[in-house]
Length: 311
Ligand code: UDP
Ligand code: MG
Image (cartoon, rainbow, N blue to C red; front, side):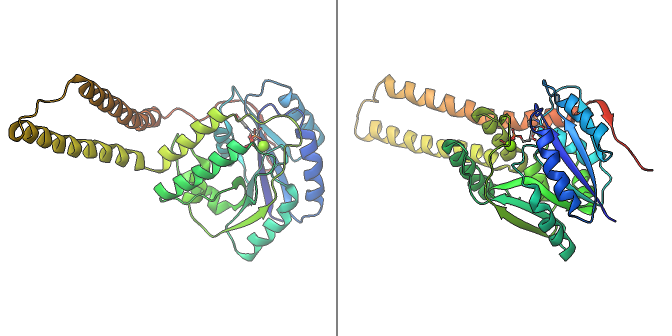
């Protein structure tokens, strides 16, 4: 029987873990796969670890890894992918926003020969309007400026073969933007759509600011377009200033007009100064990425883990 490893990142999820496992156990009994759960406790401040220990005592196929602090979902995913041993691997949120009942259908598609079966939300019901709006815009922008295609509404919830996961682990960059990495590796992908769900319990950890930073992360990790933009803006303002110089020179020389006073000068200096700082900021963002990349710090630190191995 093939083994399915399920990676579940958890941050302050004490209320959702039991509900999640109850649902999953039903799906598990209807599938002819050996299930293995790996919960990654991402430095939760509540009783998440206690709940995980209880679950690991109750079920033989529940394992967990616990981080020394909160390293973020990306780190949790990576830790999971590095630790699991299954022939098939899936990544799921614990709040049941990734519907477990899709798993049989996803597995069917893998059996048909697909390497990855992803899921995408067909709508964003229940999500704040502003968040939906910016999410849509983000996908439009990133798909225009990056070679890596990212599917709007695609979740991290996906079923992958061992070969795909090994390919993902080959990418050893420190700044990990999973949505991009998952699609960068390629392979035959099939998407299943489903209606958006609200959380089973607890609250989302994302706010507007964290999502904004997350999307910047995506753009900088998967596109050099902002650098091109900075270059073009610099070039553009150079050309404009040369034209203006010629104009004022002739105006003064031919028509004997006096050169107009300092307010326009101040505006132009301030504008160009601002533009320079802005472009410098863009360059700085990339240098910052290089900095974290060369430091090669580990993405996470494991404080304790409970992984039963049959070997
Ligand atoms: N999560 C995590 N570390 C974090 C934030 C979130 O491991 O720093 C987990 C969280 O426990 C959940 C999943 O990532 O299983 C998705 O988080 P959430 O539901 O808050 O995000 P949303 O569904 O609103 O995008
Ligand atoms: Mg959620």
